[in-house]
Amino acid sequence: MDVVGLRQSWAQLQVAGPEAARYFYATLFTIAPEVRSMFPTNMRYQEDKLLAALGHIVSHVDDERELAGFTRRLGADHRRFRGADRQGRAVPLAQGHYRWVGQALLATLERFLGPRWTPGLRADWTAAYEVVTRLMLAGAADAELSSPPLWEAEVLRVQRRRADVCVFTVRPNYLCEYLPGQSLPVQVPQLRLWRYLSPANAPRADGTIEFHVRATGRFSTYLVRRLRVGDQVLLGSPTGTALSSYGRSPHLRLLLVAGGTGLAPLRAVVEALRAEPRPTTLVVGGRTPDDLYDDAAVWELAGASGWLRYVPTVQTAWRWSGAVGTAGDTAVRLGPWRDTDVLVCGSPQMTRETIGALVASGVAAQRILAEVYDHCQYPPLAGQAAAAVRDFSGTGVR
Ligand code: HEM
Image (tube, rainbow, N blue to C red; front, side, top):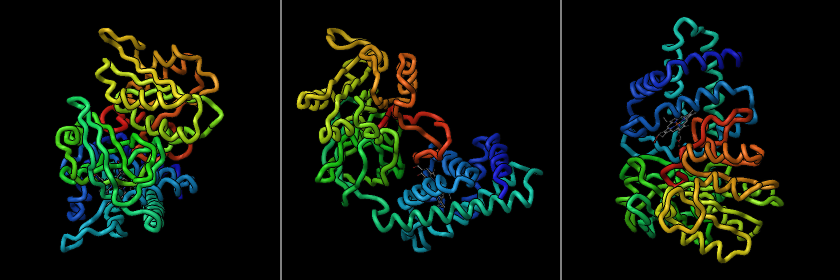
């Protein structure tokens, strides 16, 4: 298989941008109208995620070990997307669904590569796609032995902390095993949209999970305004490897820097640290004190521990006796941070600025952990630079 040819043709397709994604979906829905209902009516969020991940994977097809890890996890997670049979009953994704997606992919490549689309290239893409399909289906089959395709969860408690922020607790029907710092795809059946939220608590014996949401889009606004006790939500498989690696050097101190509801996964980490305490500083930034929607809970955590220093910081305030400045600036002022692992979580802008300020102050970049976005929410393939910091500005981790 000519991997260089695959990569080059993928780069050529990328030049077409969103047009290629639109063509891909239009073709897919023409070949297989039955899959249309699996995707949201408004495809803006999905955009080119499937296609981008697909092309990315296929063009990394020579790195067998990494490819297998990535695609098997993706396949396992795809168990939450159900097709429908002729009677409209939900069915798991099967070979046939993958065949349709493969046909749409090849048609898209052919359309946008024009004369550069040769029979040799077609054979290579076909072979690479078959490898991906096999791995995704194998990942799904293996996961079936250990976890449900998704969890149904009942909303037990909803607290509106501000007009645009809510904290809610759910109880999944089976124990959902996640690592502190990870996030979960969440769907409200009424909207049929999947978005990622990060548990704000370490796993509990009773399985309940707390989420923090700020209203920024349709999904998060629905949760903040309409979610009620007794509602049902669906949860998919936990994902994310950066923040959950907080234990990688247990002999080091920890600095946790949060902006807005980016506090959620860091609070889960703090809760988990109670079992193995180590000197930890948690800086939580807001524009005004009103943004510190979880202040009381965090003070309570810090008060009960001899190892956690909590530093809320705001940019503007009237009669505020605490730290003043962005989370990043305050974190830098509290340094130097030698022999410290640093976790950062907030909006992409906050995360970028915080990492920039910390690195400029002398913190080694490899000591900083922040979740990254790479076409989808799965760990990046080896050697791939982080494409962009995930948007943690609104929902749960946001
Ligand atoms: C073979 C390669 C495939 C790859 C690489 C792939 C990749 C992806 C990725 C990265 C996402 C976004 C996940 C997220 O943000 O949570 C996604 C979502 C999705 N995929 Fe796939 N996918 C593949 C095959 C399929 C197939 C065969 C189907 C079924 C026909 C399918 C149906 C879906 C659906 C329904 C969504 C969710 C759309 C939404 O609600 O936003 N995928 N896929």
